[in-house]
Image 1 (cartoon, rainbow, N blue to C red):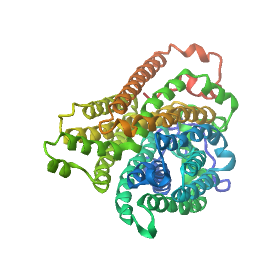
Image 2 (image 1 turned 60 degrees about the vertical axis):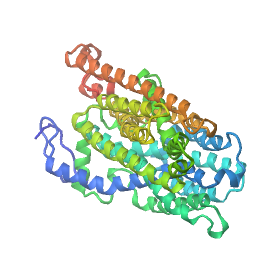
Image 3 (image 1 turned 180 degrees about the horizontal axis):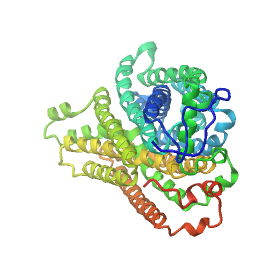
Amino acid sequence: MEKSDIEIPSSEGNNKSSLSLSGDLEIDHVAEKKLIRKLDLHIVPMVMLLYLLSFLDRVNIGNARLYKMEEDLGLTGNQFQIATSILFVTYILFETPSNLVLKKFTPSRWIAGITTAWGIIATLTGVVQNFAGLVACRVLLGAVEAGLFPGMTIYLTFFYTRRELALRIGYLFVSAALAGACGGLLAYAIGHMNGVANQHGWRWILILEGLPTLILGIATFFLLADNPHSARYLSPSEKDLMRVRRERQTGATANAEEFSWADARKAITDWKVWLFASGQFGADTVLYGYSTFLPTIISGLGSSSESASASASASASNKWTPAEIQALTIPCYCLGALTYLLIARLSDAHQMRGMYSVIFGCITIVGYGLLMSPEHVSAGVRYFGCFLVATGLYVIVGLPLAWLPNNSPRYGKRTTASGIQLTIGNSSGIMAPFLYPTAQGPRYLRGHAVSLGMVAYATLVYGFLWWWHARANRRREEGREEWKVEGLSDEEIAELGDESPRFRYTI
């Protein structure tokens, strides 16, 4: 056990915590493992379900497209791409402000409120009658959904330590992959309602996938704890252990847990934050292009195999139906989800984010290379490329979202840095819908080429950040930055956060 000379008061009367301390902070590791399991039981299913429905409501327009959506609304030219991308204009505008008010309004109220609002909007999207109505719904949907993912990312840091964060943020990206799989599965099932009440299947897809979000938003108000202190499922001794876990981390002082505009300014002026954000832009371009247009991409594989067929009869047999296309998306997303769960666990165990980001970024690059292969290459080979893209995609998108908060122990800097990272990253959603215009089907070479280039850029960025953080840690281990804290007390050094020579970056 580690020991400390600090005594932590119990949250129950004047009794001392059962964690006697002398030296470094003493942790009962058995009790800590039990606590983490309890946190996972109460937090992870809730945040996963919230993000699953959020991502589903955001990208199910790609599935709805296959069921006569464009024809019913009279969409022409690039109007579908405009309606898809317009969501991200308001999304990126409201992300950082939402993070800054999260604590003020409390997570349970804020997240419940925005979830209920987007559930209503997502459901009503299924009854729009024209392009203007669709755009209005997408604009509003982006505004209210903007606060969820950054809010969830910061919310998880209230409960989990640096060593545990990647896996829990990983669960959010598993939700994104599951949303793709569920979206394809649900669209496959709901698509059979085509013609019910004289409505095409796309309306039923949007309506029936929006209603569960509305119900979940109301439930969130009652089920989501604002912080460890207010969590009804934690006992007094477990709340004490949560406090010790927080204080055990370098830079995690009481002041560090409060928002400070000085810390926010440090995030804005930190070049590493902006480099993380630029890498996120590259990775998110691929995420939104792939998640929204995977049905379109797979449809193109079927169509290109059709064009390559030697006879009309062979062409007819190679043409995939919308139901078959939806079914073919499901295993890609499932592989992406399982891969990320495994790699997030390994990343937490090894405390390495950069290495895995680079390796799996390269796998995604190979996947796009296969998708761009010559037309005579079989559809099966190019479909395998979809699996490779999914294998690496969620890793290179998700791990950096845990990596940056890991290296920002002060709340003000952490929440601002994450807001910047997500805002810049999600701005790629404005561009991504234009990567796969119908006119460039069935092969969509430009979309695949841009996606390959963007994921290659993100891989290079994360490779550089991996090298830089490892180098900075070596310098601190060698004592080459101790001059920065000469004459400062231990308390003053702890308040420096990641600028302290005693802080070690996650690499």
